[in-house]
Image (cartoon, helix red, strand yellow):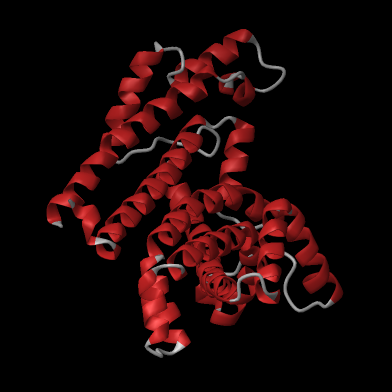
Length: 313
C-alpha cells in the first residue's frame, strides 16, 4: 500500500510541471499587452516601454520563465501588477469563500445524489426511476447561471427566504454563513448531482444483476442491507471516480457562480485578473486550481486501493 501511494505521489510531479509550462507560455502568446493597459490609453510608447521594463516583460521569454520557476520553487507566486500585493496574500484573502462554496456543494451533491441513484436502481423502470432520469437530463441541459437566476427569483425575490447575493464568513455566525451558501451550492451542484445520480444508478444496476446479490436476496436479508452493504460497496469505484471528475465541474463553475451571487472568492479574483491581464494572479490561480484538481485525483486513486485491493498491484 505504501509503495502504491508513493507511485501515485511521484506521478503528480510531471503533471504539475506540464501545467506550469502550459500556463506560463499560454499567457505570453495571448493577445494584449499588460504594460499598455497599466500605462493607460493615452500613454506614449516610451511610457509603455518603461512599464514593460519595470515588470521585466522586456526580457527574453525563456529568461522570464526561468526566473518565474525559481520564485515558484520558493513558494513565491509573484506580485500583482495592479495592486502591487503578493499573489499568495490575495489568494489567501479570497480562499475561504471558494473553499466553503466548493465543500458545501460537494456535501449537498453527494448526500442527495447517491441515495437518489440507489433508489432509482432499486426501483428500475418505475416512477422513482423515471423521475430520477428526468432530473438527470434536466440537470445536464440547464446552464448553471440560468439555474442560479431562477433560484434567486423564486427564493430571494418572490419568497424572500434567502439573501440575493453576498457572503458572510463563518466568524460572523453559523446561520448567516449557511444562509448565504444555500442558493449558490444548489445552483453550482445541479449538474454535479445529475452526473453522480446517473452514474450511481448505472453502477448499481450492474451490481444488482450479479449472482451474489440474488443469493443475498434469496437468504432473506433485508433490502437495506443488500443495497448498502453488498451492492453499493461493490459499485463504489465508478461512483468515486465520477465524484473526482466532477470536481473539475465545480472548479470551472465557481467562476460563474461567484460572479452571479457576488461572492468574493477565487472565481471573482480570476475574472478580475483576466480582464486586467494581471499575469501573476492568473498564473497563480491556475496553478492553485490545477494543484487542487491533482490532489483530488490523488485522493481518488488512493481510495481505489481501499475499495478494491486488487488495484494496489
